Image (tube, protein in one colour):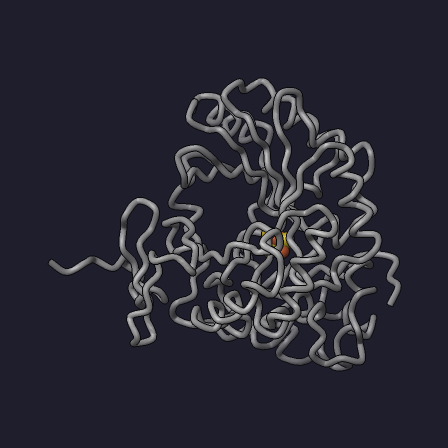
Amino acid sequence: MTLARTLRSVAELEKARLMPAGSSGSPVARVGERYAVAVTPAVAALIDGNDPNDPVARQFIPDVAELTVLAEERADPIGDLAHSPVEGIVHRYPDRVLLKAVHVCPVYCRFCFRREMVGPAGLGTLTPEELDTAIGYIAAHHEIWEVILTGGDPLVLSARRLREIMERLAAVDHLKVVRFHTRVPVVEPERIDADLIEALKASGKTTYVALHANHPRELTAPARAACARMIDAGIAMISQTVLLKGVNDDAGVLAELMRAFVENRIRPYYLHHPDLAPGTSHFRLGLNEGRALVEQLRGRISGLCQPTYILDIPGGHGKVPVLSPAVQDSGDGCFRIVDFRGGQHLYPPQPVSEPYEAQG
Ligand code: SF4
């Protein structure tokens, strides 16, 4: 399917035959009212309309299952707000911060962990004053070695805006690495032009781009070319993938995806266990199912292709590698998890979502 522009509602998706006739008058229309919708021409072109289980459609086309919210799901699943000293900054780990300059994305993923914050009704873009305060915070905290621009998708910003941010970050001596998390090279590859690529670089800083892709079909020829343009310009690339039921919960699919990253000079980095975002239970596997899948990758594909399977501990306690001794199956459907500071938690969190306290 070739579209001229991004589709932004259930009605538009129905008209383009990306959703069944009658969708806009059915309960699924409420999903489109509740959560942001956007499907770019590049994504629409990837959707196989003849496959009711198409793994690309599943990631971007609203599903009535999103109206089912479980008790353990929460609006801020990884606890950004608990670690936000000033607007736009999340300071969860000592040596790095998130800089969330914008809460807009070129597409809206149905499983998004920040679905309550992104989109037209989300937290918007930092005002000039908020951006001043956020960069002031980075400059004032000498322990900050890395800034991660995320959001939202920072590559929706114009080259001029990105250049301004990078010039200001370049002036912070103690900062060494700037990392961008983005879907743009896959969902809007034509946006990655020479002007935008130059804007991502700053004197004295190393730039990384973390590409979010979940299925090998997303790495089309234009997407691969967009990544090659960045890498040829001196930008290092890593990958992040969310492990999603019905999309990539298959060792063969994961192997093909990780190999495709490496073939394109993108180092596999994280395979995320899906977060407890509202209305996303239809995407979540159990931790043991995820472990079994990742263990199947060992030996099957090169060490270069192995991602780290990671869980963001609900509530903002940081990431933990799922295959590490810090994650213990207690055998009753629960896991006992130790975070990087030594705090102990249950997963899934109990309804009150208080951290698990060790006995004795
Ligand atoms: S691109 Fe990232 S922040 Fe935006 S909707 Fe998808 S997962 Fe969420």
